[in-house]
Image (cartoon, rainbow, N blue to C red; front, side, top):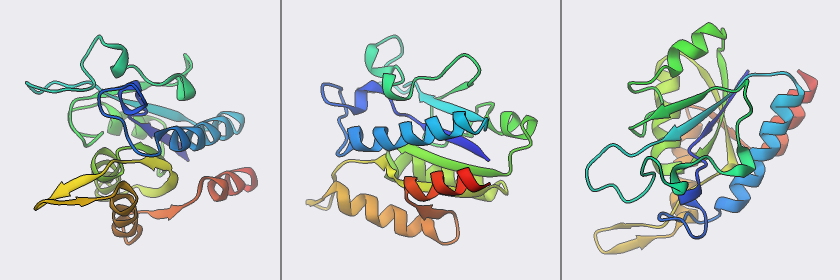
Amino acid sequence: MCLIIIDIQNDYFAGGTMELVGMPEAAANARLLLDAYRAAGRPVIHIQHLAARPGATFFIPGTPGAEINDSVAPIASEPVVVKHFPNSFRETELLDLLKSQQATNLTVCGAMSHMCVDTTVRAAFDLGFTCTLAADACATRDLTFEGRTVPAADVHAAYMAALSVPFARVTATATIIEELKSA
């Protein structure tokens, strides 16, 4: 079992250039997962998105907003995979890293639910991994479609529902931690 923490970076918090709804709560739950995985001696991989497309407004390389938030800061033994696309596997070393660790079961958390979390979980499933998604350790934002604003809570719920079959087992942080303790 390997924990993958996706894009919990400063720009997603208050004062950042792409503040998400519920990011502090999601990060707090991600921290609980991080502490539990560390205590169990299980591998942890951090994903950091650095913008590469022209006109990007957040995760600009070299800015404080692009840094991984202190609440889930990696330690020296935990790899940080830098990506430039929503899918954490695209043009990164993530797959090779997971293979080298003989990981087959992934626990995923982070941001944004509707973008990088979604694409990474779907890709992991397609690559043969078994995924558990910590729904309460993910955050997103309001979206607009055809003049209608879709509240972040509805966006999040829709993506968690869509991922729950067959891509991942979607559950709560507390459940994952309890299962980790008894594994």
